[in-house]
Length: 321
Image (cartoon, rainbow, N blue to C red; front, side, top):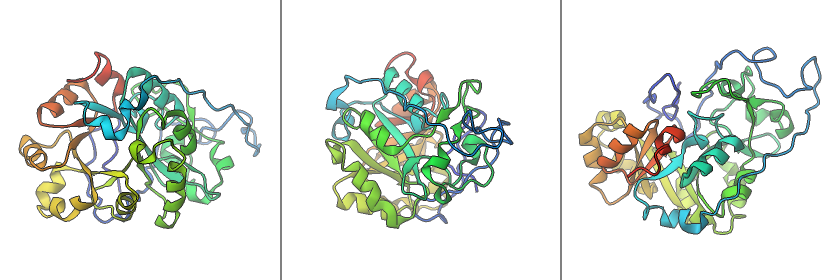
């Protein structure tokens, strides 16, 4: 089933109900563009039947002088604050260090990452259960493979507006934390990890200088275990909704909003739905915003912040007001 939290240059957000999915676990979307080595992008040295991965240096993050003004407890004081969806999923290979570095350089206020867990316990940026959509593999379930095996592949730019740009390595969550946890809010969504492993994730988050000011637990609106555990530990939470689903089930919002500190509504929802959502006492963030025009309209409708896929276009003229 396609995931509604998916936006590609050739499609609008897929607002397909995920009510049947538990804990935010999403299936992989298979079928990336044709790439090297039987459909998979592998590191140089792995072609020709070799199986040993080639070590590569981790990208050096660009230092930020933003300070703690971009941490979660101060975001709402910045009208129209921006969250880079997967680091800027329309612009760069999603959830790569390259994407986050470029988004920070353009002035985003926060970063968003979906997480999967390898068989040897490494949490890394991945929206799906498999690497298939992002690297062109076939049936490569992250949970069944080690981090060393994941590192053999690269995240393609097939779903960006510049598909010819170089593919990028997958990114460990702790590397993102080391690079930006002291300067930027990080929205964290454990998409495809069993709940029994959430303690490991909280332990990684605890390494940040100010964990509850840095991380926001993100999930689809009906997710329960992740946000409730996060709330019990003092974290803010953000649950996203779709206007079409709210219209189809008027009980959806009142029955699920208790586990969320902040709410999310798709930028394409109609004006009446936006009025209804923003009439409550919880801030509402627009998602997943691809353009400057959509960002401006979302703010006009009462969005407190913007979860942005098209970071370059949205911020090309500076902060959105």
